[in-house]
Amino acid sequence: MLPVTLIQQAYNKIEAYTHRTPLSFDSKLNIYIKWENRQITGSFKSRGALNKVLNLTNAEKKKSVLAASAGNHGQGVAFACKLLNIPVTINVPSTAPKTKIKAINNFGARLNIIPGGYEEAEKASIKQAKQTKEIWISPYNDLQVIAGQGTIAIETIKQLDLFSIDIKNMNWLVPISGGGLISGIAAYIKHEFPDHRIIGVQPETNAFMFDILKTGTQNNTIGQGTIADGLEGRVENESITIPLVKEYVDDIILVSENQIKKAIAYAWVKYAQKIEGAGAVPLAAVLSHNFINKPVLLVISGGNIDQNIHKSILRDYEHNPTKIK
Image (cartoon, rainbow, N blue to C red; front, side, top):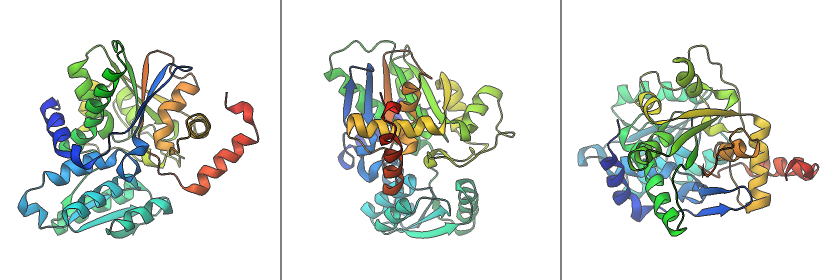
């Protein structure tokens, strides 16, 4: 269980350092959209990173911080550490997008490129932290990080109140990988609004948490490359998010690579919002009719997509406008 008081404390602690990101309503699709791509560093990850770093003891702040990241978590941690003048090292997988690596570097973090994908970078980092005694900040296996991500729920409920609508039976569609984001949101929402449903959305190419929830194990799950690079990789077997997801999350649904790309293009054409693959999966679920229950609220988790990849996706859909309706 994640105490709601931790999430409220996180909200009070980080509010001064984060943006209140927009919440919009699409009357055609009957969906509410929380745009975390408009957050500092371009994703929700700065929330959890800030809460973790701001809660470090004075002794811990004198040490170096260490994180592993395919991009967004690294930017969030580097931003938070720069704010408090704490040295930080980010171990980045060699598969990480160059734009995200550059963004991490811009915040003054030391960078190490680890051969392989995120899973390899995470394992190497955990081992390094044990040897060097650096402060390891997991992107999901940490209560302070999870509580920080959960502040999205508090902020969104405040914004929904401004719409003066009855928010009973709301369905939340939230990207899921390691489970930090959805665990924080779900813990708060299920405490305050037990009738709301929390649905995770994951690429079918990386269905690790999906398989954990459905079959109890990820041992037979094989990951592949995905346009949603922020959702790649298996979950730490002892992660605190696994029991949290089992307790709070109602279901997980999967979307394909083409469905994610369509959602990226749709967000640009219809909403003038640049979103990355990991952030696009909730919209992909709605557009592909993988999820049809209403009302529904989408958490668009980030917008840090390589400009050339974004342009390529848009060109594909410009050549076939019927793909976007």
